[in-house]
Image 1 (cartoon, rainbow, N blue to C red):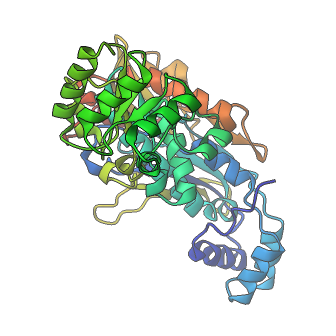
Image 2 (cartoon, helix red, strand yellow; image 1 turned 180 degrees about the horizontal axis):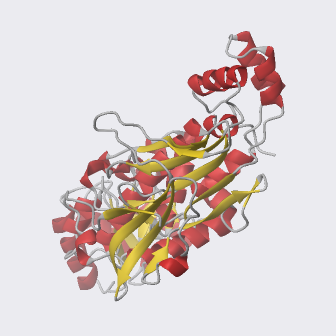
Length: 441
């Protein structure tokens, strides 16, 4: 088993648990829902990411003696709560959008059903994973749109917390990035890794030529040489002189990239290196990538902007109680009514309406708890969006590990093709498709 994730939790969840155990409401069956009231940053869609990681963390959400001792020593729990937490296992069910799926305001991204006690303690863990990973995946998807058919590599590990860097690489790969520089992401999630040399490699040697010769001897002529440590024009000339016209690639990490890329391409062609690829890696975001669309660039490497969500570091999702059982066993829809933070109570089923294969709206059907949820048969013109993710105390097979990442990446590639053309624009705007609520019959 992996290390416990139990204390990746806000204290107020434990406080509510303890009070619920005292007043007898802890065992009430409840439905919690994860959704976003709006799309952060004026984005036109969001990308669900982190689900596979979350399912694994929920499975390891256990309170061992060390965790319980800490809580007790700091006055966070009484003896009754300690005994309850010592036996904690999430035995409820989780359904939701597949990882890699697109979401919109009000989309029921994740539905957690179980007792109040079981479900409430998961709030912080759920939101911390989904909010970060989805923010990165959304930024990555926008970059992939801007890049078109040109490959993207994630290289932001040095700009993030060491564990966030691994999560970011995973989220970026799901949303279209082909490789990562992070070796742990490669090992854990099966993502292709890449990387050749930094400026330090060139500076280590007595000359740029010596550095290039050594790298080629070690990695072959198909390697990519970093040509902007000193003078770019001289660097390109040296690279081709050392490697020959079969040089695999050059990397540019500075300068006015559209101008520099054009000059480098012209120089490479003049030297006979017509197939040598140009990779650019200088503080790119989706807008910089889009500005390079007409430039002779073959690939992009993105770091800081990607791992920080390109200016939107959280997806803004919330975890709210939307239905609960009364003492007599009947169900009651509940919802927050605060100004600007209104939520829709009730269990929900969600469908994406497709017209000729293009998405036109998100339909969310609301049940007050008594009616059964709508099934795909009742929405023949739409694609169902929710699936079972966690049941019987375990993640459902196929959603976790490297297999889950591959499935999420493939799913994302399919669903992004459903979006109308307006969804692919990078400017701030309204969501690409509307969310429509309907009551269950």
